[in-house]
Length: 382
Image (cartoon, rainbow, N blue to C red):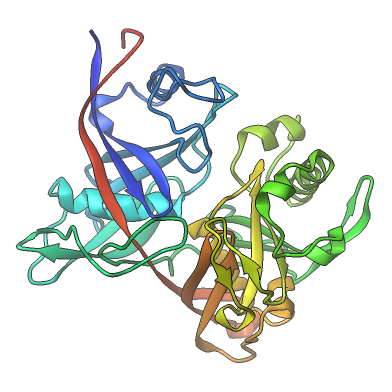
C-alpha cells in the first residue's frame, strides 16, 4: 500500500492537509494527481479521499525548509477542486496561513522562548513574508485558550498574523492595481457596474450589494440557491479579471478553477443572524459583507478580511463608502466585518505617500489545531 505522511490541521475557519515538500513529486501533473487522489477529487462529496467536500475544507499546504533567508518555513497553498480535477496554485489562503504558523512550531521549523514563538513564513504563492506569533505552553504550541473566531466552535489560543507585506501580492502593481479607487466595468446582461479592485493577500473585487438588488446581510444559503445570481457574479469576476489583465483566453473556465479573484458584496452595518442562529447587531460591526468565489463562503476568508480592512482605509472606495468608520487620514484603525459566521476584527494601516495607496499592516487573530498526524493511503503509485 502506497502511503503518504501528512498532518490534517484546522487553520482558522478552514481545514487542510499539510505535507512536507520533499515527500511529493516535483511540481507538475504527477504532483497534482497525487493530491487529487489524496483528496478524492474529482467528486463533489470527495467520499473516496480526505477532502471535506467544501471549498473551505478542500485545501492543501506544502511545507518545507525556507527558500528565503529571512523566513523560518516555506508555505505553498493549493486550492483543490471538488467536482473538477484541478489544483489552483495561484492563490493564497489566510486561514491555512494560521495553520502554517502552528505547523512551523509543531514541526520545529521555528522555536520560541517564554509565552510565544515568532514565526516568519515565506508564502510561496505570492513570494511575500508573513509574520506570526504562536502561543506556547512549556515550549510547545499551546492547546488551550479563550479566543473565539466566527465559524469555529469553542475557543483556542490566539495566533496573531500580520499581512502588512501583502499589498499588491497577486499582480505586483500595488494595493490598487488599476490605479483607481473606483472603476466602472460593463457587465453583459447588467450594464455599467462600479467596483473597487484591491490587491491585498489575494485579488479582491468590492461591489455594492444594493447594485444587485441585494442586502449584504442576506443568508448565504439563499444566495447560493439563486443560480442566476451565481452566474452573474462569475461573469463579473471574469470581466474584471480580463479587463485588468489577470485572465485571458477561456476566462469562464478559468473562473471555475481559480479562487482569485474573490468578490465581496458589501453594505452598511445591518443586523442579521449567523448560520448558528446568533444575532449580530449593527453596532457590533462596521461593515456587512458576503464573500463569493465560485460559491458563497459560509464564513469569511482571512485574505478577504485583509483586503476588506485595507479597502475601508482607502477614502472613496466601495468598502469605505459602506463602512461605519471611514478613515480619512493615515494611521492605524480597526474594522469589524460582519459575515455569515460572525464578526471578524482587523487592525490595519493604509498610507498614501505621493498619492499611492500602500498597505503598511493588517493584523488579525486566528486559532488553529492539529487534528491528525499520520499516514494517508494513496490509490496510485507515485
